[in-house]
Length: 635
Image (cartoon, rainbow, N blue to C red; front, side, top):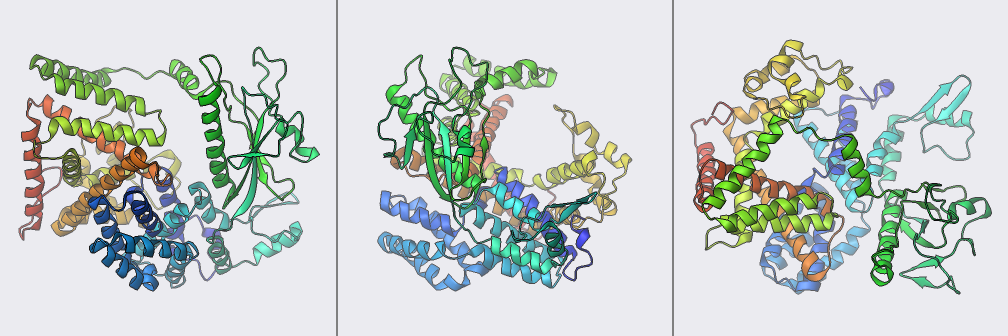
């Protein structure tokens, strides 16, 4: 138990431990981009409606339907009950295609919501569950759902997800005693207290006190930050360094200082001593940028975005084949009005990411074994078969998709999203029926692929979770005791190999035994949910349909974002990282499906995907019938 040190506190409970665990796991999920379309909240939808009207006057009826669907979802949420009437009116405007009225109301609501702390409202609901120590399965679902909504609200309001994750860790920290020294770990101690007083203050804090501090920290407080970046490849010779460009100043640190004397050395940004051909190792051109943000990491992102735009423009206008204006990663930042608050990176690098990546690849190459060779061979065989059949459009499409997806690995997030959509359209072009649009084919086909796959996802996820709980780093968890015999028999040890292909049939047959091997509530929930999925067709069908709807909505947003980038320049940069991973997955899924179809000897993709749509419809019918329908791995 992570919070066992507080077990004498009256508020300590399994519910609190569960919430702590969920805060960390959901934060990681958001950080890794796995949260997907769930990241869309009321803030984002209102901004989208505003921009949709200002830029396109609601030309896209599909986008209008997407917003309508999301507004209907938000109306049902408990923390939106105060604004239910306003949202119902907005829903009516969207239904009646009254774009101007929807736009005006969205602007009004966006302004109101910007001053509202939904994270605190959600936490109040959560606090009721924690104080009552409610811990039924239904309560755990509520705790998880509220935690996710709080994290998403914080992230979409401007907080960096790393800072959000730290909120929960930091609130439960105390101090360390080493010999006679006291090291204070709890960061919310009043600054005027001595170490002894701080220790006493922490000792007297109850869990309720800590949670109240946590609640206060959910309110976004903006702070002024100052950042300085070196501009390598440029020597500033400006006479007036007080003028601003894009809202920031450019200056030569050897001629003037922007920091206090004790910090001045930070403005010089020394280069590594092996930088050839330089008479000295000091910056001759800096930019100084002031940012108002909710955290240092968020401020750093905003400052870096402004700085890189300056570099892009400078390179566009003044660089040449043998001259580049660049950044080596160094920067200095501080809270504008706080002394000794500096942070940053003052060690530069002459090696860019591409060179570093290639050096690592040389020293640690990927092993081309038989399994990897067979994977490549299957693609080779498909290309050869298509060429023999003179299906050159199909060959070119597949080759172009592979090339574009490969290049996209190292692209920016925006370029990745654009490229993955191009790949989806290229594959749709050779797969769709003549009376279908590429967008309709992509939306219906990919969502159907994931609808069909979802019947196997619970058992795959449970296997991966079981494997995780058998790793050495988690063996200290006394609530999980999985026998070695079980681990060996179901193929967990075998799965550790990089290219392993483990059949899950044995694990599927023995999955119910896991209930005997753990008392960890979150693990038990996953086991019970998996067993229920395969025993209850209604639950299975609901999950499959939710997955199909989720994929369709995600595709709608990917396509909308693609159009925004291409046609009008506006794009929600907060949203793109959460869409890119799914755009890549959808493109990969469709490419692999096309390759698999050709490997099986079917060369009419139109017929195949028509049959696959039929499979989806048939599965839905079977799961809707009164008679039980088996969907496990034995099926």
